[in-house]
Amino acid sequence: MSFVLGLKCRECGREYPPEALHACEWCFGPLEVTYDVAAIAAFTSREAISNGPRNLWRYADFLPVETKFPPGLGAGFTPLVKADRLAAALGLGELYLKDDTRNPTGSFKDRVVSVALTKARELGFTVAACASTGNLANSVAAHAARLNMESVVLIPDDLETVKVLTTAVFGGRLLRIDGNYDDVNRLCAELAGEHPDWAFVNVNLRPYYAEGSKTLAFEVAEQLDWQLPDHVVVPIASGSQLTKIAKGFAQFVETGLVSAHDVRVSGAQAEGCSPVAAAFSRGAEHIAPVKPSTIAKSLAIGNPADGLYALEAVRSSGGAIAAVTDDEIVDGICLLARTEGIFAETAGGVTIASLAKLAREGVIRPDERVVAYVTGNGLKTVEALADRVLLEEPVAANLDDVSRFLDRTVAHEVLV
Ligand SMILES: *Cc1c(COP(=O)(O)O)cnc(C)c1O
Ligand SMILES: [Zn+2]
Image 1 (cartoon, rainbow, N blue to C red):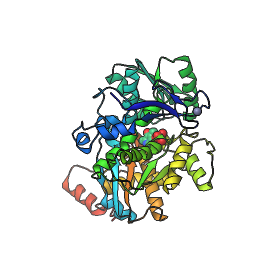
Image 2: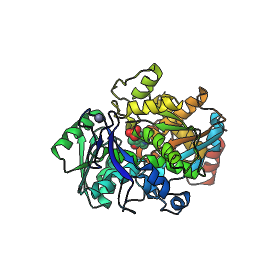
Image 3: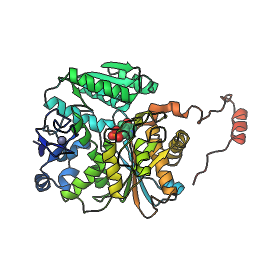
Image 4: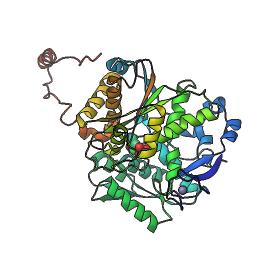
């Protein structure tokens, strides 16, 4: 049982049945899942959620699937970590990190994929497909293996080695395309036309896929003891995650699970692919596509499908969007690791560097309760550290050499 009413066009409001559809037939606007919110409010409670499974299905009433406890990899319900040392380093007050490095395949994409593929199975699909900047590839291949589906995954050929290997290991079909993500995505849209019997998680299943990101908001609210934060910082690739985090907070307020509270939503992009940040700083009403060039490959979408909606969510909430350089991204990865013991991928570096920048600029204030979303695991992008984390020569296995080594090196870079 679900509380889904159907799909609705974000632009013209026309309604559609909850099937594998993603674009409005009239205006080509994106379709979004709608719910009977009053019925959810009457049915759900803090107690019921608290007693639910320790994964994202504890919020099943807010998700577009019929199956009560679907099989999967157990995505979600990741730790919310209070980050006092990082807060002190940045001159902030109450700071938390949503540590989504701890998902089954090491990124937040496990949330969106478990929702999309659960829905796909309910609709009778047996093939899971996607275009990916890396993390989606990992997650689709892994979930397909677990759910007994075939997978067809398309990626740009210049991805990090680990992301390619940890997709291939699951045994589906992996196509490395000579082109960037925007080329791969265009190709995928064409392929979806040829194979309407395949569940493309980010094409024909996109409305369901996107809903999975709301759980990033629900968990934060529950983990803050049923309160909303003052300010969140969210990385932007297509802009879907940021948009849905804002929607998640709104749905918790609408259903009475938390009191109404304004949440400022700020975005984070890499300067080498910052079309949404550029539109924000220009005050523009449209997004000019760019050709990506950044080490943050998981965020390298030059023509973001939900960019305008993300921009609107940021503006209407009183947030801002930062863009940070590749050097600042690596600084962000190192600062996070050295203050909090969390190793994030380049997208996490983008979030932390943007958090630092917005704090420096006074956009994020020390009197705010802030949550930064760390969305991917550092083991996936070790290349980024190649000329930054330098190793000493090996030391001979005797006490004299070890003592000399200890004498000439410092114990720890003191940050705070
Ligand atoms: C895909 C991805 C994002 C951003 O997702 P969008 O919803 O496309 O904006 C953020 N972080 C990581 C690690 C990702 O893989
Ligand atoms: Zn429409």
